[in-house]
Image 1 (cartoon, rainbow, N blue to C red):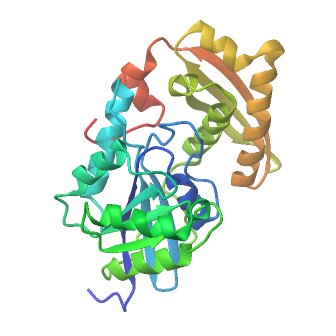
Image 2 (tube, rainbow, N blue to C red):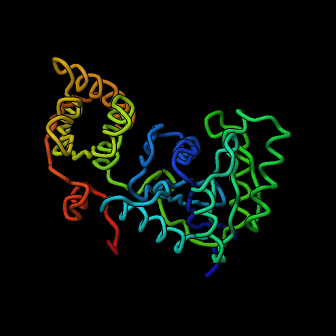
Length: 302
């Protein structure tokens, strides 16, 4: 089939927790699609972001942060990560350039050793490191794995992103435009809205609590006159004590989460939003595969 020089393919983004994978993808797409937080294990599902230019289309798959699973949800996240590596044309291995190589990085390197897919080493957060130290970091990683290319970037500041996109494009085969050129994700709006709410809860709450937070959008309906969109959502926790933390004194915490989430949802939908949030205890939900699936965290081989 003749694609007239148009190139396309799937690009998986992998790296240990919080190296800036979601920040990178959101910078490329110009819109929040992948959840961003400084808490570990925030990316739970394969969020597909679609970047289209005149002669190429890249479908990014943001894999869950690599970690040793402690519960069913963790097992699910690891399975998604491994599956992702098998189904893409290019792998971006993103590391935090400002930190020394760690066990998580070594674990990923071991996972990647037998793959025949081109691997691009992406050193993120170069704004936090001296150029001499950056060169040393590159050598450390190149000693451990044979990379197709090495590209230093700052996802937060947008430095060198265009260069990285050009390198990715050079590895893509000629192919079809999988998605319409104005599409930036294949996830339904309900799922993205639930992720935006969860992101705000992660930002606001303590280190241990976020892992026990799930969000389900119950209803999303626009006014008949096309003015305001009403969103109703449930925030799930695993214990009564956690419920109190999410609600906060006099409902203050829940109001803050709702206020910040509403602004992002309005930006996503392009209209005013009325957001109603409730908190519900679903005991031990992270160990219940059926419930996990009901929140939208799905994969074919769960």
